Image (cartoon, rainbow over all chains, first blue to last red; front, side, top):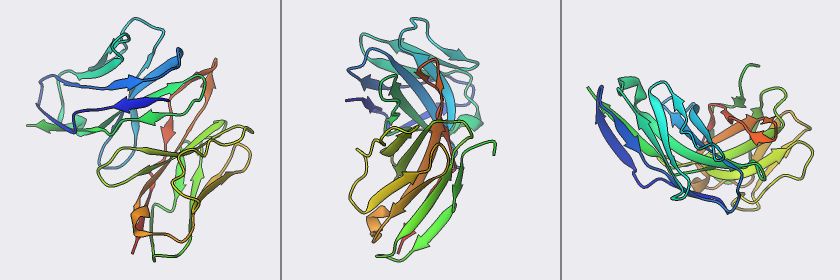
Length: 114
Length: 116
């Protein structure tokens, strides 16, 4: 079974600073994919970043990067130079080539302080 | 359309009534998912359709919940005899496969269901 755990219900960061959101997962599959989604107050889920488990290199998208520790089953999201528009709920998710079912964590609410 | 479309965007219903929620996925996407999101909570998996395969219904919370999908197009989630605990946002998503790998799941804006 797939599980995704986010242990930080809420985080705060000062504008322009860096923040890291934590995520751990568990799966019996060897071929899986990890995602971070952002959900602003509009409810629209937006993909932030995607990581293939078979790739050792950490994914990066502009100010967003991940720290993928496969042995520890950890997949944290780092947001650099935080902006007010980054304030949202962030969900970690996993999916596998076998089931294609996306399993989500409980989310972390990020507040950005001006 | 360009994205996943859900209707209605908001629905208020009386306890005990049946409701139908609709999802139009992105054209060509073979996979379609329904999730439930209670206020301030994460996404709870409900059901997953993949092409013509039998759907994965493992997340449906009770037999009051059912869903259908016609081919690779529209899906309808039906909740019978609604209860107050069914109040939530119901999110639909669709995705495609690229070389066998799960790609990004694209989400609709959800239907906010309120049972009074």
